[in-house]
Amino acid sequence: MTFETLAAREGGPKRADFWRWIAGLGVVLVLWGVVYSQLIPVSEWLVSLLPVDRSSHRGQALAFFFYDTPKVILLLTLIVFAMGIVRSYFSAERTRAALVGKREGLANVMAAGLGVLTPFCSCSAVPLFIGFVSAGIPLGVTFSFLIAAPMVNEVALGLLFGLVGWKVALTYLGFGLGVAIVAGWVIGRLRLEGWLQDWVKDIQTVGGMTIPEEQLTFIDRIKLGIEAVKDIVGRVWIWIIAGIAVGGLIHGYVPAELMVRIMGADAWWSVPAAVAMGIPMYTNAAGVIPIVEALLEKGAALGTTLAFMMSVIALSFPEMIILRKVLTLRLIAVFIGVVGTGILAVGFLFNMLFG
Amino acid sequence: MKDVKVLGSGCKRCYATETMVRDAAAKLGIDIKVEKVTDYAEIARFGIASTPGIVIDGKVVHAGGLPKEDALEKWLQA
Image (cartoon, rainbow over the protein chains, first blue to last red):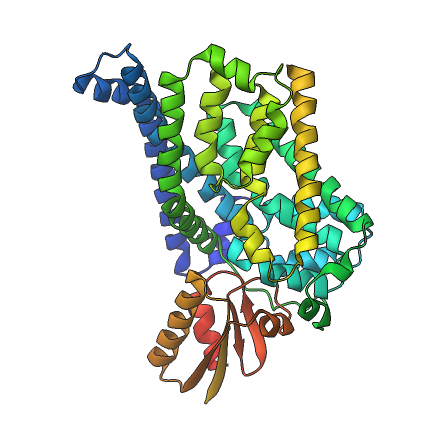
């Protein structure tokens, strides 16, 4: 689709509006590029203003902090904006309609993929869960969606891409989807529908009801992208700064030999330890990835680090408290067990392949 | 009098949606009764899979995210 056809769709007096938006978007993107290219000189200049020796531990930690904070926030803004536009083409109701009646296996794959693309916030987790299950989507398929949605998100992928590199980002995407598909499939095979809370089992809905499409113009979608930036960046910036501060401390103070001994590929026990540590930790991808970057740089094994990251993001207490409303404790335990095992497998596999 | 239900368990966007509904109705001079539905079981019965949702006179018109202002006005006038 060309801009011309998009512009034509806006029609009449809105056409000029459309080009104004596109021009504005272009200017902002160019500005973004200029600012991004100046990050290193500006961060070095900031450190030079402070009364610290650049080569000292403190100087290194500060330089890392001044460079990474704006870099991460800039990257995140761009990614969240782009993803906000992509997500405007998806909705939970349409995803549900696509999943109804598909056979398990294939449906798990689709659910995990759609989990990445469908707009989702954890406050919607319960309505989504009930909406899926009561429309006849199997429990395991619903879980594939609910595991992938928070774990494989644009914030995680974008930051990994920007800070650690595309290989690790792609790996995380592949294995994150893999864990969601396999864990959902296993939960489906266990036939645990009886372990839902009683009131959930009783709900009868009109299966797969759809709402009349809301016609969105391209300007609407750009606005949704901006909304997403305001909402997500506005919410996670504090986590980013906290994560980068911790990353900066690791960067400046933790000796590499110690890191290799604790989180290196030879320390097999470090994978389960990383997963266990990640469960009670609550942060989102934005906070944990700067830490991941620093850990990797200091010689932590990739598998151990990925396992830690997946555990922090996918297995969190707040989400379980939300899901507790619809799942019995037994079912939550199975969920943690299956997903945790999947993450462990990813960690070990990686350390074996790349260790 | 239009009967409007805002479905949502109390997230920030659900409150924002309720405010938008009231503002739009006031602007158009339409008499409405707004009810907030926060109970998950009751929300589920409307068949939506994402919140906030808007139901006008028993018909679901919107689910997930904030509604568009002009769309909201159209629904209220319908």
